[in-house]
Image 1 (cartoon, rainbow, N blue to C red):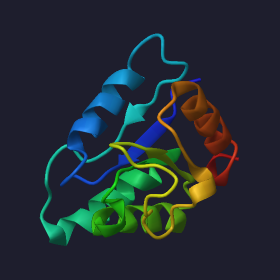
Image 2 (image 1 turned 135 degrees about the vertical axis):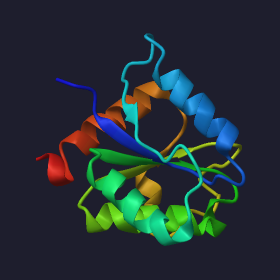
Image 3 (image 1 turned 90 degrees about the horizontal axis):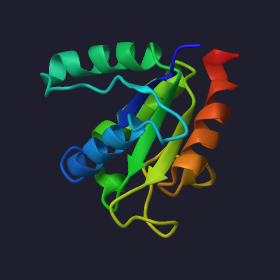
Image 4 (image 1 turned 90 degrees about the vertical axis):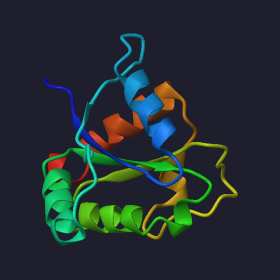
Length: 136
């Protein structure tokens, strides 16, 4: 089976370094799971952004939201979560950048689906996502 396609949603203004580390670690052979990163690789004009991103999310098996300390103000992330729900793509979160269970989460990201940055927990979450939504 091919690796699942994961869209990584993150706050580009505050957590781009963590996103790069996350993607890099996911490629490590010792990581218990791997996935393709289908996030946008460049800034897009606002007029095209929604259509392009929704189309990318619709082609993915899950959305992983990297939930940092300032995530509640990241409007793009909230839209990506909405796009995922519209496309029936399961969503889970990973705490990054010092965020934890007391940090604010963006609308639509469930706290009981947001976990620590631990690859065994992430692998379990991805396996669960593959059993949900459009992947059934």
